[in-house]
Length: 340
Picture 1 (cartoon, helix red, strand yellow):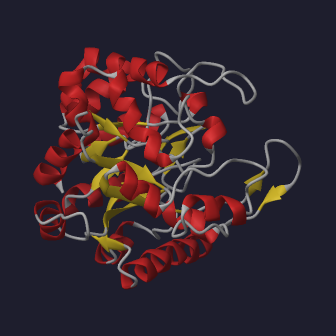
Picture 2 (cartoon, one colour):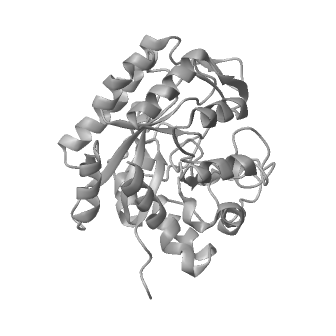
């Protein structure tokens, strides 16, 4: 049987999970046994699982959680309330990645040379290559603060998760603020990439008008699932039109309209419908993986038959044979070599 191609995954919240008391450096069964979130979700993603799936490079997030209300109760979710709190969380994320790099578990790819060296010299003994993606820009004080984060290795920034000081976000509509416009212009000047996943429509089109490099690291199609978390056809065309990429996310509620936990899970074929819809709009050459497999939905919230990250390559069987290698890694690899 022919082996499946290796993978690039454009969205994994590896450090944030560690800060939540989880340990992705453990083998999965040990991770599950010690997981403080085991009653809520069945964990899927560890560094070993990524290796067994064939992931050579991923975009690892710096994710910061704002204070908010639990949607299921009146309880307050702990999180930051100002820039200083967001920056503290972000630095904690960075510390996790630095400690892993010191242990030889990952290699932080801060420059184009780092990235090309990693891809060109990769061997089965190589650590996971990791590019830093900031998800939610509140750790950045303002546009003048951006060089500090570049020095830390951040090369991609999602301006919003929910609404931030810079932009409207998921379920929190709004345009770019004045500070957001200044930040996007500064990102454009520095050759950084805006991640449009989680951007509200108004903020998205404000960003397109400024004209930075643009991707959506983990977004499915709004033609198939409603809501401003997903991309309209016009958004997909705009991303492709500026040379960008779109990553497919493996969250069931983003795959099938109206899906709820306890219902039969969508299949990998259902996820492939999003890929095919995108391909009909922009071709297969702009589509990749952005699984977000450790993004809070667990195995129960992943498409059937996914139980652990090493199952992710099965998705490739659901798309046309001639495009499998491109979606697995070749499209993201081309984008990185051209744009990183």
